Picture 1 (spheres, rainbow, N blue to C red):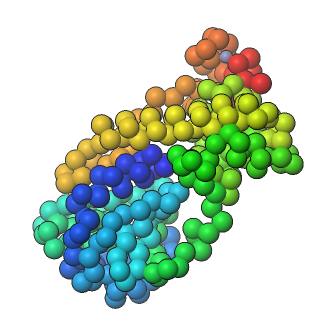
Picture 2 (picture 1 turned 180 degrees about the horizontal axis):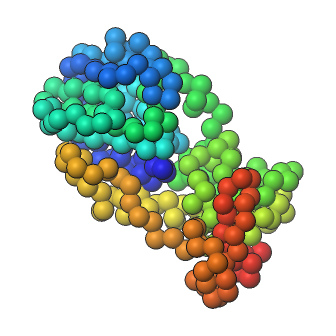
Length: 270
Ligand code: ZN
């Protein structure tokens, strides 16, 4: 599943190919993805110039003066810029044709992604109530400490709560808690300020590193082969239950926390 670094990498990869381009037409090969595609996408996007692409959490906003197309890659979606005559493959659901002769093509085999509309000056309901971006200055240890007071949920569930901070999925939560030496089971309200500083730093480090790696391993956005932006992670604990802890060598524990698989070291994480 594309996580925040893949979405950010997708944004950066697309940006130079779409910014300033005029949209010639929009072709929907089906009326819906996860949800129906609103009529504004077909009616308002054509003839608009693309001002840029923003990311909020794992959503991408293709901005024009008429409004913004709001995209989510879901479980399996990808966005690529292709030559206009590139043959259509299975699950190529949406084409946005650009005046460069290229096409921005949305492929999504499982259709958990979405293409929605945000009017100028409005915030789509999917984007309201979201916590700060993890790589922004608004997210730090002091913020986590303040938000966690009175929260009895396990710290891992707290960290994955999108109203606390966006984009910290299961993989990144497990890795950040390992680096910070915090047990995922610990009650959020019982983690000290100093340990939250370490945790926030770990989240930023991991995400920034993944985005940097994405930038170097990413396939060409103008190439029709391969799904762009999804890259192998260098993972310390995630998916390694029962294997030796990379720090102390003891077997890593595995259990379900908040219905999500969790792996941690009972010795290094307290
Ligand atoms: Zn250990």
